[in-house]
Image (tube, rainbow, N blue to C red; front, top):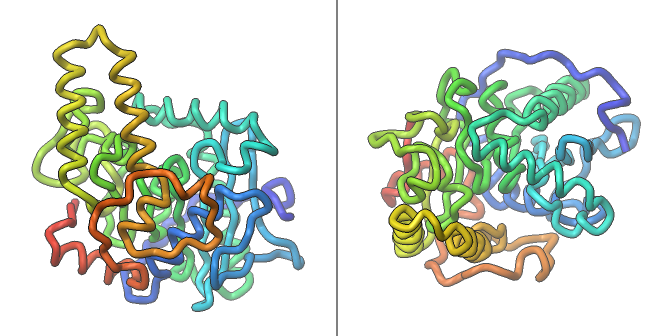
Length: 322
């Protein structure tokens, strides 16, 4: 295993990808994200580890909650995948990381940048430098992750211009978003209180920052890049109702928290996104992927590239643009 201690991370770089058809598919990016929840870094289906000196490049820092792996697709594209909160099965071997990842989540909810963001960026810069040295162009390097991993991927993309998909991330502090882009996409499952925690998605206010109507990129905590909403709109309506009830009776925070957790378990788990997007997860675990409400219509976009995914979303009226 090669980690950040084995080489100095490069500085920030200014290259900006242009959205083209030459990107990993929705399935490849979701599988890379989901694999971060499994012990032993199992390779996502159809991929192999990115290596330096014959060793897979991975990174884990329990002190700030960042954990990531790097994969090469069958199309010879590099995917940097960041781990979400709890680490899934990895909680059994590294329980301490749960504490720091929860702190990262709290910072995100209070529109604060945790150290994990900078650490994730440094790792991405390191991978880009190493991949460039092996002949991979920056245009063929992408970032992804689910939940907290999606937030880290979103932040890295906002600072570097790398494309990718963040599955169910929150928004970012507006000060971090200097420009918007079309090569990075955020998925928002209807009813998911994590992905809806932003100022450019309507539904979770007043529990989250005030909604800025009209487009993405507004308010104090917007998403970076495009937003694609999917699932069952009725689930978003349920969440809105729960948040409205909280506003009417702010003293009952216990009930609000219980409702929030219930929504999270129902709509935030990667197995739910896989079902709704027509993705077959590999690796798969019923413990990690089996929970959640999987009753929304299946939208068969698994084999689409990022631009194709965006086009399909626009055609269905599911795309929110900057």
